[in-house]
Image 1: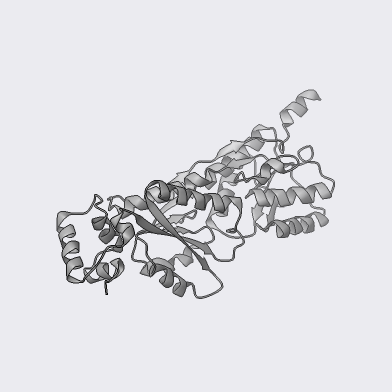
Image 2: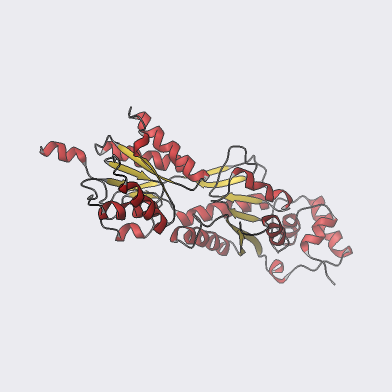
Length: 342
């Protein structure tokens, strides 16, 4: 019985990706390594799969759902996954999609996933904290971390430029004449939201505006719960800001609904800017100004970065940060125009 590529790689102390590269005639493998692989294949009766014979390659896309309070079947994450699939298809590759959940033994789950076919792995790590990355120690293939970054992370990362996006959104509110600018902060702790908090603070500091804790409200990233959180805050009759930056569009939409039910007009009384540019932004009343993320491109860049690793390209650890762009709709009041009309 023929052995697998992973078993062959283990016998000659190489990665499965290197074995696959040899049989796919891809660059980046030395002649000595090619001879080693081919001789071992003959010795151990290794027969390349049909996909290898056709020059195809396979990667694992692993979606980590620690609590599914951020990563769910929303248009945002579906489009990121579509970007991965499209890029692989265009480059003659295949994708196996697996889910890691926090509800059972994660270490065993990652072992099971690692045993499946695949020359590399993209880990959608949005919900992962720094301590969660220990599960990757036994993964013997190249790994790209998608949508999560920590300074001490020893993997290539492809992320959103969260700090830039939050800075731009907050700066926009200042340029529109607002000075009492609050923050609708997610109650879920992930690296993306921490970076957005830093961008919000940096923008206010750049304009000499202090961060007022009274204007910072924590809301759930889940729509219904976020709405209930905002309702509870409003029931306490707090002092509100004139404008808010929200960690994402779901939080912005939940807060807007609560504001309006309590008699606040958007944008006349309260302006709001979100983050992500999800389809719901266009159908909200009023349509939501937000920071656009090219979600498919995020997935495409992850594939490009992984292929570079699979090809054996020599470089240090990479952090690719995708810039966001401001989309102006109708949820922000131009205070400058109001002041001129008085």
